[in-house]
Structure formats: C-alpha cells, structure tokens
Image 1 (cartoon, helix red, strand yellow):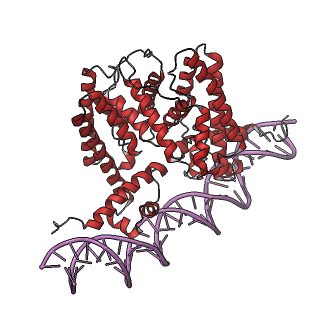
Image 2: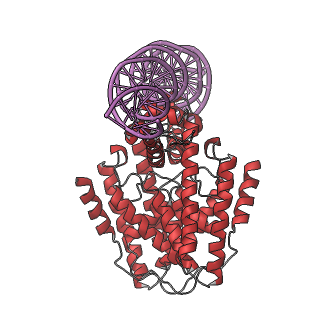
Image 3: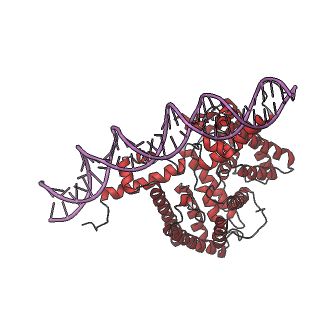
Length: 216
Length: 216
DNA sequence: AATAATCGGAGAAATTTTCTCCGCTTTCCA
DNA sequence: TGGAAAGCGGAGAAAATTTCTCCGATTATT
C-alpha cells in the first residue's frame, strides 16, 4: 500500500526522468529552454511535464534542489569512504565536473532566476559548504592541499568545471574536461605534483579527434 | 575622403559596439538571445542592428571572427613581448579568460550553429593553433611546462575558463575566475610551483562577499 | 551649408511557447 | 485477476515573444 501523497511508481519514475533531462537541457541551452523541449527529450508528453511542474520556476527549483543534494551526497560519501582527505577532495571535484549542472548552485548560491533564494536551497548550500569545509581542512592538515587554496576556491573551480562544453561532441568534451580536472587538481596540490604523467594532447591530435567525431 | 565600401565613422563605431555587446549577451544568454535584446543593450535601434547584420547567423559569425582575431592577437603579442614562453602562455590563458566569449571558438572550432565552418573561421583557428603551438613548444623547451600538457590541453582549459559565471555579481565572478586561472597555471607548471602564496578564499568569506555584493 | 549616409524605434506579421483538455493506458490493491 | 484510481500523451487554441521593415529625424562628410 502506498502512503497518501506518495506518487505512483511510474509517476515517480517520470518525475526523476524529467529532472534529469531538464538538468541537461538547461546545461546546454540555458534556463530559457522551452518546456516542450524538455518534455520531448524526456520522452513524455507536455501534459505530464506540467502536471509535475506547473511552471518553469518550479522545474528549475526542483533541478537545483536535486543537483545540490547530489553534490552533498557526493561530498559526504567521499569524506566517509576515502582514507585521505586529498582523495576525497579529488573525488568531489571530479564528481561535480561529471554532473554537468551548469545552473551554478555551485557557487555561494547565486540567485538563479529568483528561485535559488528558497529556504530549502539556502539550507542545502550551507550543508554543502560545511561538509566541503571539513574535507578542505583535513586536506590542509594532511599537508596535501596548498594552504592558499580555500573552500571558496574549490567551489570556484567547480563552478567552472560543471559547465560542459556543449558545442562539442560529448566524448571529446568529456575527455577535455577530465584533463582540465587533473590540471586543476595538480595546481591545488601542495609541494609534489602527484598526477602521473601521460601523453600531452597536441593541437594536431585535437583537430584530428574533432574531425573524426564530426563524421559520425 | 572615404574609400568606397568604407563605412562612415559612426557606422563603423556602431558596428563594433554591436559586436562587443553581442559577444557579452551571447555569453550570458546563449546564442538564442533575441536580436532586439542585443540592440537594446548596445543602445542602438533595431533598424541599425539589422542594417549591419541581416540575420542572426551573420551576427554570430561576426562575433566569432572578431573573438578569434582577438585571441590570435593576444597570442602573437604575448609571444613577441614576453621573454619567457611560460609568461607568454600565462598571459594568453589569462587574457582569454578575460574575453568572456563563450561561443567556444576556442576549442578546435566546434561548428557553433553551422556558422563556424566558414573558411574564414577555420583559417583563423588554424592560425591560432599555430601560434599557440609555438608558445607551447617553447615553454616545453624551457622546461617550464609539464611535458604531458599539450596545446590541446591549453585550449581545453581556455574553453572552460572563457565561460563566465554569469549568475554571479561581475566583481565576484571575475575574482573567482582569476583564482581559478592561477590554479590551472600552477597545475600546468613543471616541477616547482611558481605562484606566490596568498590568502585562501574560505567558505565563510565567499558567502560574506556574495551577500555584500547582492545588497548593492 | 548641402548632401548623402545612417539612425531609431513603432508596430504589423510571423513565429514560438505555453498550457489545457480529455480519451487512452498503466499501476496496484483486494 | 479485475476494476477503480492515478497517470499518460499530444493536439491545438490562446498568449507571448520575436523578427524585421519603413520612414521621418539625425549626423557625418566635403
């Protein structure tokens, strides 16, 4: 039996599908993307979309809240599961970069379209900063993180990294981002550069890879 | 006397003004921003905008070409004026980050809205990669740049950095970006971490600064 | 000062977006 | 398994937005 107010299984599934799709659509087209486009890409009818989210603001709000929860979960999990704070930090940064959110809940909670001021969002942001602060402090203590890099800096680079490279073929964009993540982490690292060297990505290779992707 | 085909002084001024404005508007709202919005923010009438650029594509094309030229000029100037290739590279990356272009001419020339495939744009991209390649090679030779960081990597991080943090107050966004630039450069640097330490940006400070900005 | 080029912006036309309505489908409890 | 309640999809009317022209006023140039 289903508690009252509990959504039916398919409805719940659709709700999540819509949020996930909306996150990506907003990431690629900005928060002005049309509702119908979100519905189409989510593979649901317009009616379904509007039943779940009566207006654009409520959808954006849901996306923000969901993304924030993901980031918090990411940070908590990383803190609990990694022995070294540095590894937790790397994992968090890399994980955020993979979220492709782009609505910038990330940084200090810019009031994205007057939706981000909600108590729920604000409280989530505070929680995120708290967890992250613990990781950053621990990383400082362990001597792995440069002392001149603070929690705000971490959120700053995350803010840049979460934005994808939307005009690129996904695979290439993902690889470029991963490489950028490594560079950023290397730059944050105290004294020894930790990441094992690999092949550089040359201009030639970049062009070649790009053309190859384009042909498919 | 004006050569035929030469624009009148005010027309030339307006043309540049429109391109500059369009670059920023597109950076903030994506290439779907309305033409009238561009005209309004540029402080010209819709008629003027349409006289210079008959349709959206031609405006986007002009913005791309202009941005590309700026990047090329930036790279050339940096290469000529700096003694050390590493300094030239830093200057280029920092300069690009300041352009706030966001149309991703940056990376390998994604075909942004079918406009980037133009011969003019392609040729510009090649020129940019050439100059940059010289700088990167020189930086490798001088031992300042990690050997596993190639020209493609540089374009990759530039691609991330040129995108602003549009939902933040400009001043805060700019500072966050500058700090991120330093981290990226530090991460690219071979052996010794060169940037002088400064104060970390803490979570507290970030929140405080954000609130302060918001009140004005 | 005369002339030719350019400007601005009101507003009609075209396009796009929103959002409702209702017949059909799916879930889930008994 | 059967039936009632919940949910689904998408056509299309209504609303909102965007484009782009036209012409009297303005400004650069000689």
